[in-house]
Image (cartoon, rainbow, N blue to C red):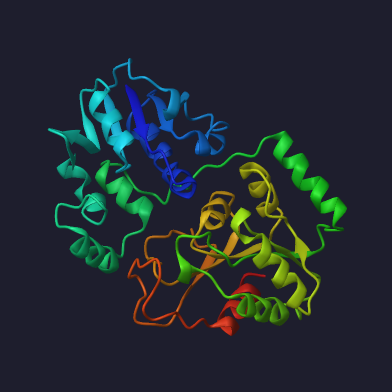
Length: 331
């Protein structure tokens, strides 16, 4: 049985989708699994020994035929690849007569997406009503037995060495209680994140925890933001830096005992690395995220929860004290 998974991005979505691999291996004994992905996401798959071949979509040309193509992305190039690749069966999105379509067995997922047959307004309503986690949905549409199989992200020796050297440089020991703070969310979702002032409040209220070390995370868009957080916080913070490579970022997340994070790439990395997590949500769905009984979900208060608006009409009210309590609970 030869299977091609098409899931190009975003990186966090690629990571969480790896949870389907154990289920596929259980159902289709001795199957071969290939994966088509964007170059940007290649590193999160390259150490996964359950994947036989990772194809980078930018340089991949369809040639081989597959028994099953699982197309889980609604991007043009993903749908085109699903249609051009020879296959006995497709589950998911494809192109027919110049139009993006999706198979009936994948409707539980795509009915809530950008190519929903019901249109965006109803798709967003269905997304808000949904109470199934992402892996539950994936296992349902693929007719696999769901046993809370987890996503896979493997750090190699180079990655682990990077983390150890960072810990040594910053005097982080095994006796320390290390809390990662990732309260930004890139540029697209304005109301996913905590403000600079709210982040400083969170950090300062966490400071009473014994043997605490705080690592502040961020991406390239958060360089100035994190400078302000470090400057305004009364508590000493270890700066992870905002220019790490993808796997360096993951290596530093791996140092944390608890990660406090928005619904972002850091969340998916933390889940895959089996970290304890306090995750906060507002315009996106908390129900869709599986924390595997290692985390706490905090939902912002406001009328635009689960609205999927990049900029909300009603900004969230965050329970900072609730976040602090959740961290202590996971200690």
